[in-house]
Image (cartoon, rainbow, N blue to C red; front, side, top):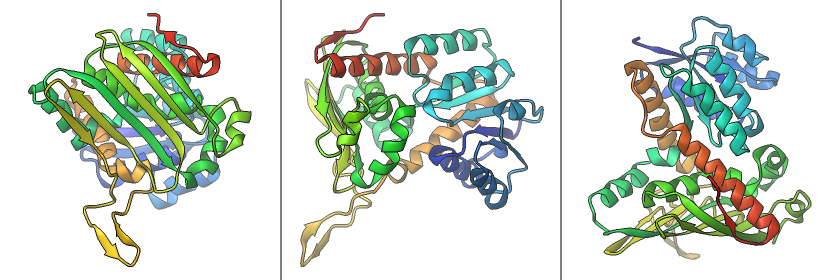
Length: 339
């Protein structure tokens, strides 16, 4: 296989981003087909990107024999169903996080994937493909900071994104599942351990609409890992300054800090307003390069017939911990995570 023919299920915010990445930045791959229930999104693919096939039903896309692999970029509530259908249709599958909103649904997808060992099936944790996050992992492996025992990680959106989040929250699983899946994955990755327990708190401090939907606009979770390491995870929908994703790993011999400040570039501005650095507006801007690397890695591994280091087990654990964080927030108590 010299060139991978890809089909996308879902053409919303993430689907369009991946479509543009495949069209402009990924080697050895072409975008052959897309699926969306919205005519405007199909027109985007057909007329802006010249995608040969457009469908309104994902099962029609899965009947296209020319396809080699499928990327599931639909609403979170549809991920498990779409990924299962794509696997059963015989395709390699990439799915955006989270894999599903329940542990049970994650396990069902994994059962299907395990029955098809020749097909690559992964969930996207793009921060692992960001150069800075990957470099930090390398330094931990080299022993630079000794034994890591604390991870602080946050996902913080600019307040201007609230309108989108308000409409999306019912399909996303809530702030813990939507925002903190990456932070959960990073804690597991950097600390090389699983979560033992979590305690989450927060509220709707600025936008009461989220409380009306049994969610929040700002939350904080404290976690303990099985190896006794500590975790602090933050999510916020209300930052005034910009998208502010940040991670800090503390070890017995040093500290690694990633992404603070979340600068648009390395320029410092000194003018009548003082000294400052401009901040990126969205996660798509902050992690654009990592999305390219992640997609290219998926394509390369499919072509070479190799497995990837990130697995569906990582996706299962992100959902397991996200569910526990949500439960802790609702019940206002610590939740010990069962396996």
